[in-house]
Length: 148
Image (tube, rainbow, N blue to C red):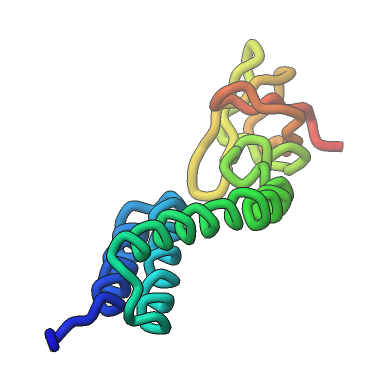
């Protein structure tokens, strides 16, 4: 009897695929790795399963694992993403917030302090130190109006 049985090899393949998923994220290798782990479980439960039977079982189980992700889990994940749709749009998160001008707005252009940085602003002419409210974002320029 060899040191490694067929089910051990499937579990090693599963660990390799899941490890690659960690290194190369994308939700795809994880599900194939789960299929390999399930095949290892099947090979452990049915030790006389032929190599062809294991290969077919792996193809079916990997497909099922991917299908479960695509049809059951992915729609749920997409719904939760919509709540954070402004997460990567930093400018959109600033609409409605108030900031202080660190350069006066002259001829429609000035600068405001935002956190530890400064942003270009467009709006009506206002003096240094005036408080402005963000009403929109155009690229990396904030559209502002005087804060009431």
